[in-house]
Structures are given as structure tokens and as C-alpha cells.
Length: 76
Image 1 (tube, helix red, strand yellow):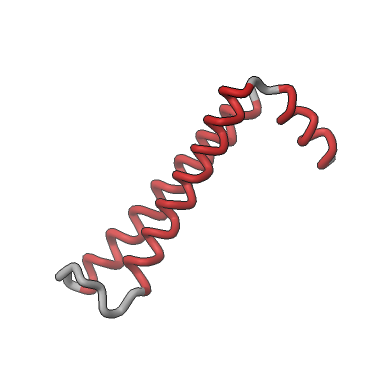
Image 2: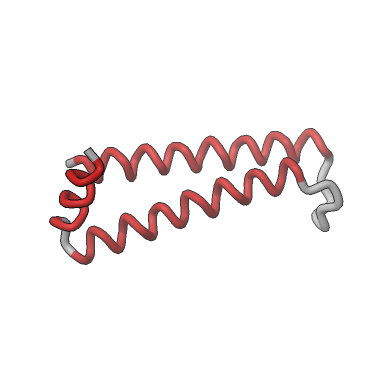
């Protein structure tokens, strides 16, 4: 199964592989930024704790939406 995935990934053009890697990097960036907003106690941005939690959850949800869009476009 893993070998098939690697072979399919290698069949993609250089542009498609680059866009996939960049999309995954942006997904990780949004995920980490959402976790930072939730768990960093002494954040230099003045924001109420409830709003920080809400914004962090929103960023994480958006990260997973991007992940599923990348995953679905990669299967085509």
C-alpha cells in the first residue's frame, strides 16, 4: 500500500508535487498557530482567554479543511 502511494506520488509532475508539499506546509502552519493561540499562556497579544480559544479552534478547523482539500485533489 505504501509503495503504491509512493509510486503515485512520483508519477505526479514536479509542479503538482511542489504544490502538495507547500499545501502540507501551510496546513501544519495553521495547525501549529491554532495550538499556539490555545496553549501559550503569556502570549504578547492582548486577547481575552475565551476569544483566544475560539480563534485557535477556528484556525485548527480551517487547517483540517485545507488538509482535506489537498488530500482530495491529490487523489484525482
